[in-house]
Length: 555
Image (cartoon, rainbow, N blue to C red; front, side):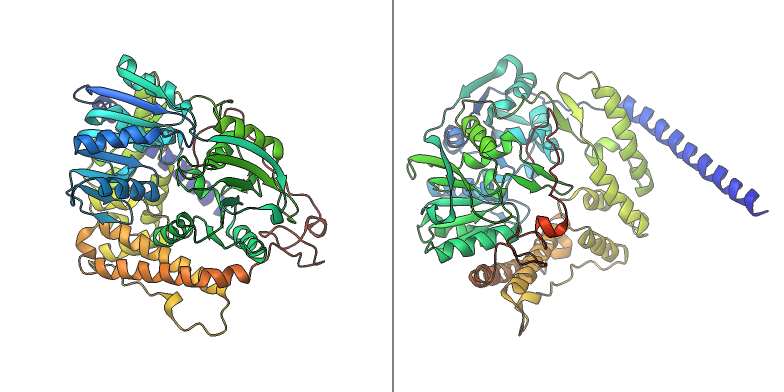
């Protein structure tokens, strides 16, 4: 009897899968009939692409036009870039003329000029300055650039980025596009291999983990250099303090991750690569030439550091940089060698209006159906392609498994599924509150502000980073659901400031307590991110090979 029941259950499950597939196919056919290709209403009056390597002054003319016209949008991939443009424009224009809108901050949102992250850029206005346009090839965020190229209605378009973005821009704008190619304003040269004792003031030393940059900062501090760190987990307020101190010459050197490869402008004379491989979330792999070119190109800054030098670091156990790769990156950053293949296509993804759904149950099917319809309709498009909706499906599935999806309205569910918050736990917490009728954000508890007797500086730093990440996540949720955060906005800002202050306070001690790695078995030097050296772990670390044709920015 049991085998019969088991076979019936399998047959029923198979039939249910076929029914869902048929329903998705029906939905896809309906969406295909109603599929709206993104397009702009009116052609722009001018379209200029400022393309070139790092440190070539690409954004200067574009920002100048935005300031002269007095109305429009500056959009960039990073909060720090948006903040930098906001400060530059605000210093030049009357009070109230410029606003800022990022995932963490909103200042003067009704200003005629808005500096924002690309996902938040309005689809219409007077002047659009779209920075780091080569991010259009990013697998997770490229759709935000794609939608603007395809459908943004601005009178003047200014596109700023790397030379390999030119093919997709020509596809998007045709003969209307004017390309202005920029060359580096400061010479960049290969500096060879150096030791820690040869790192000079004005240097950025690059590794790819927090443990590594903290340990390297300790070694440089012991050599008499005033040294701090920059890495991705630092909250924006803490990063700004470090950047400002370096620019004010209060620091001699920074130990940094590849966070500097995405447009952070520092007056550094030298970039020293301690590593040329990193863990990218799935595997440890060698960096691509375009990634290294973005990093080493930060050496030299027109008007501040009139020469750029790129070197590799030697003599640090467990850290190794490939000199050949870095030399090639120097040539690419100087415009003498292609940094990567040309970008030919741009991704787009749907809005809720595109899906034309009324209930959460319809939304699940519509997300799958859109991908089928978009693949069909865009299959022969000369430059647009459908962006994968894997992350959206993952978030929707998590909310459905938690039993809260059906208790939300479709607009709330879509905002939760598509919002830029790294923590699924925070999203689920808010969804549960919404489903239960609790219309307020939970007030954050800051562990880093509690008594910490016996805790090391590294532990306190961990707590403060987690506090800051949670507060940023809550703030992003509050912006997506403003009614929930009306009473908490001030508290959230104050909480993030407290976490950032705690990080700045504890970083010197965390640096002093770090080391660049000792094997837990034999005591020999090893990589900061490893617990045992290669000999004791029994094998050499394996690097994933670079895939041919791989391109585009990664976060």
